[in-house]
Image 1 (cartoon, rainbow, N blue to C red):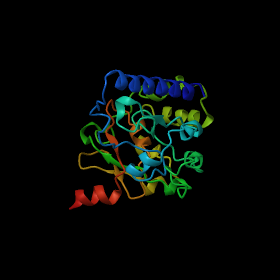
Image 2 (image 1 turned 60 degrees about the vertical axis):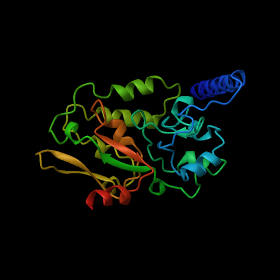
Image 3 (image 1 turned 120 degrees about the vertical axis):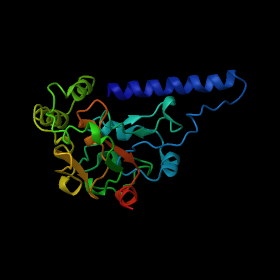
Image 4 (image 1 turned 90 degrees about the horizontal axis):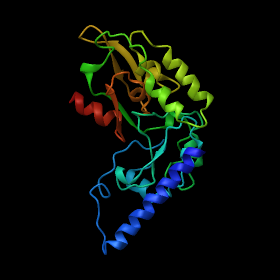
Amino acid sequence: MAKVKTDRREFIKYSTLGILGLVLGGGVVFSPYAVGSENRLRPPGAVAEKEFLALCIKCGQCLQVCPYHSIELADFGKGHGVGTPYIDATIRGCYACTAVPCVLACPSGALDHSCEKAEDIHMGIAVLEFKDTCLAITNTPIPKGFNTRMHDFLSKQVNVTQLELDALEKLDSFEGKQCTLCADMCPIPNPLSAIAMVPDSDGGKRPEIYDGCIGCGVCEEVCPTSTPSIVIKPRMTYEEYYSDKRS
């Protein structure tokens, strides 16, 4: 709760300063960031972006109930949806909770309540964006101490859950092994419908994405390279991305 309170204080503070600045300046000046198009990874069940921005009341309820601390609230430096929830998969992906509590907590319909289970989630699609750095393809063992990001992330939380500790323990167990993290850490009930490691022409293995991928972002979070080799394309479907690549 302390983090939520801090986030709310920061949001109120910067909102107030922004309004005062406009008043004192004698006019309205729009930052290019304030009107820039949004392309963030939204929480499960998020409706179309324009509708989402219209419906979201910025209450933070989804953030408060997330057991993995996956959801953040946007500030002034991150587009015109100030105060709206989003997920930064480089920091923390969505772990596709069975009951989808963030959706249940949403009072406005910005997160569609027809999203009732992990398989109903459609946030985006995973893409092996940087093949040349993928440890699986180059047959490079996962280096010692690779998991500092998740350790650091949890060290900053005031109410770490058992689910988070279980994920941390599982991720730590891969140290020194051949990399299969994106496939083995996939949180959906049937991960093989979303991602699998297949032989690559360069001699190693590579992650292959299937239409069961929900775009949760866990693969991006756990990727051990300094810049994740696999990333999420928000609000893009499997058909949209991979049909274009095959044509």
